[in-house]
Amino acid sequence: MQNYNNSANIGSDFIFKYFKDRMKEKKITQKKLSEMIGVSESTLVRNFKKETEMLLTTYLKICGALELNPYLIPKEIDSTEFQRLFFN
Image 1 (cartoon, rainbow, N blue to C red):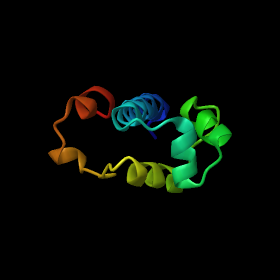
Image 2 (tube, rainbow, N blue to C red; image 1 turned 90 degrees about the vertical axis):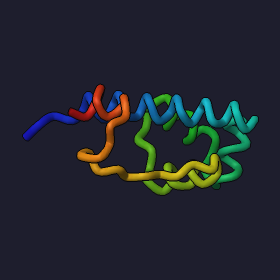
Image 3 (cartoon, rainbow, N blue to C red; image 1 turned 90 degrees about the horizontal axis):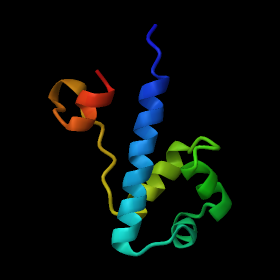
Image 4 (cartoon, rainbow, N blue to C red; image 1 turned 180 degrees about the horizontal axis):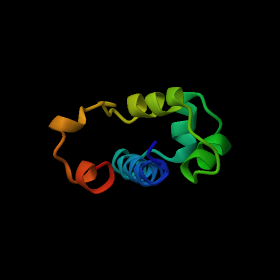
């Protein structure tokens, strides 16, 4: 069985950076985001620092709040740089 820990770590770094960039773009603070999605600010901070694992429901709520689509793209049709670098 392959070890996907590195992919998970790099992927979560990428996602959290994307979330933070999107928050800046939309002028949404972590406090405001936590209020929007009904998660405590401390939990959100710990999730973003990877001190605790983010729940899938929290991820989906963040996508909704930041107006992002949480696509699952099959590997065989994904040609993005993200795919090529981390999930080969």
